[in-house]
Length: 142
Image (cartoon, rainbow, N blue to C red; front, side, top):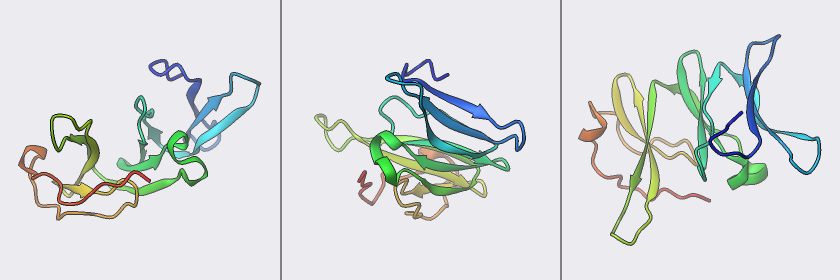
């Protein structure tokens, strides 16, 4: 169970395929809703009010959009081909709540990837996240 959010979300593993998926037990009834299909070696929970979660296959990470934010459009937007990831909140001024950008690591180098579309938005030339400049694109959320 995802006890951090208290929303009835849990991860389950298939005995047959050994793959993980994510589900939500509906409090109003006995139905269980699939949030992420049982297709991954492992996966992370959605952060509180988060738009996406990390999914893993063969030691590589990808991104799956959250159904709470994207409804029927929730899907895997980034295939599992990256080595690591980090969410980066960028604030444009002191009153801005910030926008979440996604840095991903590929072949020992970091770059930006649009988590909504899966498009690589920068070259993967940075040794560390601290070496990366501010993103030069606007991360859309819808």
